Image 1: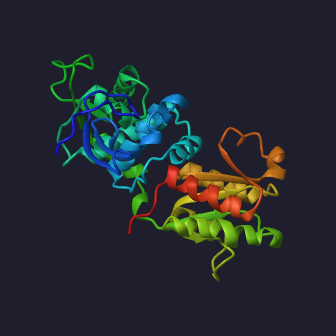
Image 2: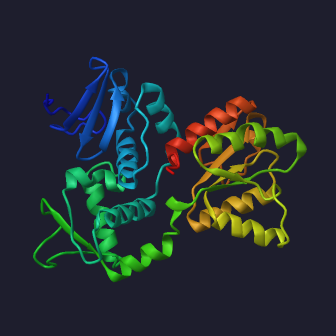
Image 3: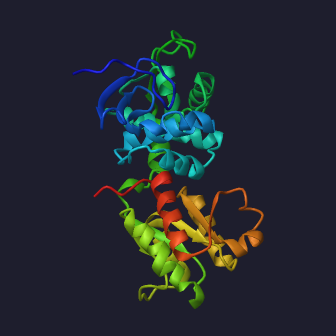
Length: 312
């Protein structure tokens, strides 16, 4: 039996498709034009609206739908965890996300992608259509996108027929290191024996639970120079976990190198060392942990929220 369209409980877009209801209506699967497909519990509907972060959650859902990453059922607890761990993307990062999303929607180079602004907001993690148009205009001014029928159409039109330019494809190739295919997670942390249980009983297990393979540079024999090995293994990783407990300069260096490559960096610190975190990195959301079980749970949730489970 088909379900009547409803307002999406995440982005509040009206007349969105209801795919199915489960458990006597306690769980509902939506196929939203802005967010994509997801399943949400009855108690979780409205949580995103109360937090004021519905745009970020909508962007998170749409991105994972485009990438084919598994989305766990949205419970109240899970939504709060996702929102708490989502980074605040800069305008440049949002432009890059929008260009990447258009790439994923493009069948072949030269093919037009038709964007309906009210549906495409989430592709840029934008708050509204004005912000989306700003990023589209910026990408066009940078020569990465062009509008089909230039001179005849504008960003004030109800539909935007966008094409990635040759320069845009070069930009994507230059910045896309095929992260989705990588299975390794590089761990940067102090090698002090006192912190080894934190790696073995928490960090490594959290990474493995999400489908990735943890790597610490001291955990395997090699004949390379240590700095060359570190750089090579960071390049070979999907993301980096940087635990800055004990404030080792090498950990900050490795995290900075990863940022320079455009890799996600997940920051961790033991609660008694939080006050010592370097001022240049305090702006980033840190996983503050008190025990190994605490670190394992928080890091696993953080990876699921920001990276997604590795699909094999």
